Amino acid sequence: GGEPRMFRLLAAWGINAVALIALPYVVPSISVASFATALWVALVLGLINTLLRPLLILLTLPVTLLTLGLFIFVINALLFQMAGHLVTGFQVGGFWSALFGSIGYSIISWLLSSLLLAGKKD
Image (cartoon, rainbow, N blue to C red; front, side, top):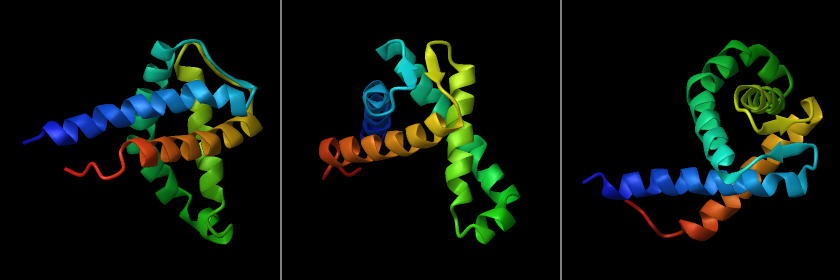
């Protein structure tokens, strides 16, 4: 049934929270108050990336094409910064912090997922 899918969803949520806890060591101008805060931020980022990101990418398609896709980094940074404004205990130092934070978060999450969820298919 849905157990493996639910496990992967919860595991990904936990992995993303761990990535957020690790992030201030890579980008010092980002702070995460606690693991509970990281869980909230991971949830908020997941919702933002599911609901807002596709719409923003569609609306900015001409700019994205002109910049050969690089504008997506700006969108990701702004959404990451938005999460910093929405969740108490999660601080992002500004645009550049958000840019490097969103890149670092993606890399750390990807690495942890690759290591911890490798070979575990539905």
